[in-house]
Length: 300
Image 1 (cartoon, one colour):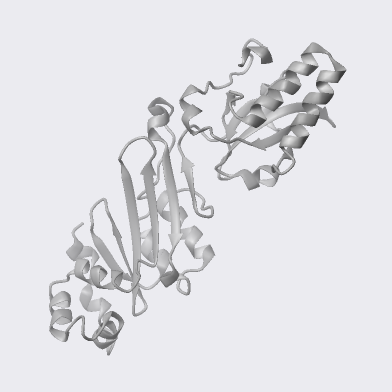
Image 2 (image 1 turned 180 degrees about the horizontal axis):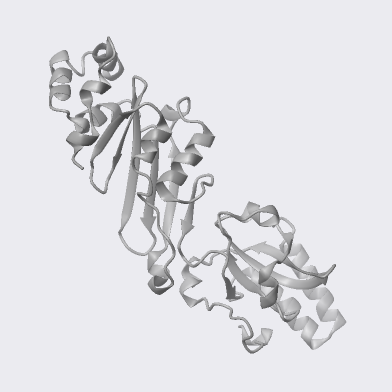
């Protein structure tokens, strides 16, 4: 579909006094009547957005960028005189006018919707970002921002930005014990296996001291409980965007599910945020049901 079919500059400036309001917005000395008339006659959306960029627009944008190669994408939303206009850098096509921001987003629904493909590996990892600029604060509510982000990406929105498609969300991976907390968890497991009360006490004290300011929660496992067959199991997981209850605060983050125990017929684990995993993701090995038990000391 051509820009001629998706953009109507005559409609955008149809309201009485629109051209004058546009000149006042951009600057009476910056753009003349004749230039505005030519922009409308030529249905020149690029010129329109170029002018709006001089007054701190776009009002909102969604971006994604690959973590390990140069691919990226940008969706921008602009506003003038009660109308919204959009552009993405896939086609540079300008669309509009739209009366509502969500209507403008729906015209590009699924533009950046991507799904994890196991065969593609870590190369598909990306960073999503949703940014409501100061110029859009009074135009787009936080709820509408979430709806726009979801419409464009297919993902539920979270504040700021997040990495995605590194691995399948919700899937369990063997712990690498690569960070400080991981080493302390392994120290606890090793102490229990060795059976020394003194070593156990020391390991648990070290863990408590190091994680005093860390957000740690208890989580009662559902179907994932089948993977925890030993008191020494510890797995890593990318928390899904749809996570609820005690996992909700970790959405899109990497966590460690460890220190399992039985409580009221349920398997309960500690959920601990994982740091510095970015470069380690290619080394991760998924956990399979009914696989041979792996000794905690072997996971060094």
